[in-house]
Image (cartoon, rainbow, N blue to C red; front, top):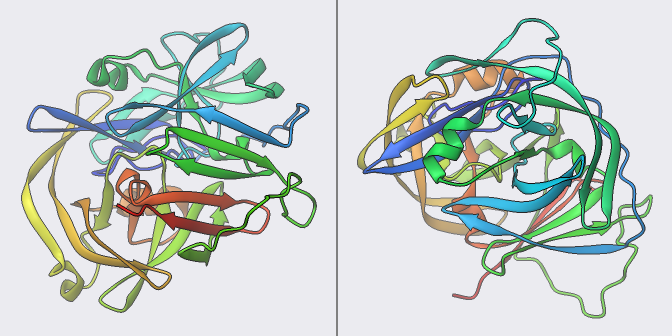
Amino acid sequence: MHFRKIFCILLLLLFSPIFIYSAINDTTAFLPTYKKRSPVRAPAPLGFFNKLVIPINHVENLLLMEVNINGMTGNFILDTGAPCLVLNKTYFREGYNQSAQLATGITGEGSEVLRTRVEKLQIQELYYENLEAEITSLAQIENAKGVKILGLLGTNLFTEFELEIDVRGDFVTVYKLDKDGERIEKQTETKTADIKIPFKLTNNIIFLKGKIKDKELNFCFDTGAEVNVLSTNVNRKLLSEFIIKRRAILMGVGGQKAEVLSGYVKQITIGEIPLNNMQTYLSSISELQNVYETFFDGMFGYPLLFNGVVNINFKKNEFLMYLYKN
């Protein structure tokens, strides 16, 4: 599968890597894009631990983690919109071309996507050996953000775990699970989640339900997306809930540009909890639907994460959220 689409939402990376950025009032927002491709096999996680607490650094709305790959340490973006590990062609040049495919998105075709094998990838005590990865250019992201980025940590690295993402606390916690999806390290105190809903994992992309004006919609969940995205094809009555603030320009890896609308949705309900005024781009996502072979109505990115601590239990297929108190 390829990788990041830029579509107006810097969506997920799925089967073909494509990356896109949006320039708005001299700012740049990252949104992923992909293209169909044979899937990368999930690697087997190794390491002796039950719980890892990993610091994250923010570059605007991107979440960076320090990772060691083949003896080199650097920044990787945590990106559940990417189905697999993706490496930046600037630093990883040796790969093979599976089918002469290019990363593509709304703004058009971008850079070539290659496959490679990684000898070892390590995040604290968690590590993987001899794993498959994809290679594409992330130079546009680096240039826009002014930071060195070695790659993207995609979903198939974490499907044996529960992830807890706390963007205000600046850490990600990885929990080992037993065969029933329960944490091996038991909690001394239990909290009740404000939101607890099932999600569907399709081709290593997370899809969950949300409502606008009592209409249930299907969203993909992408920790690598700096903004939420809403499809232009949703019911017109629902579009009345989208408040336009300005136009935005999305720029693809090859310099291609697409104009979208930037604003916010007055209210989106997840579970039984209404979330108000989350920053959103309004854009066509038909290309992404074709890539993911799944119909969906939009994408949840950083604006959702900023509302609370998110837990993703991949064995139970549960999405939980503990809302911040302020």
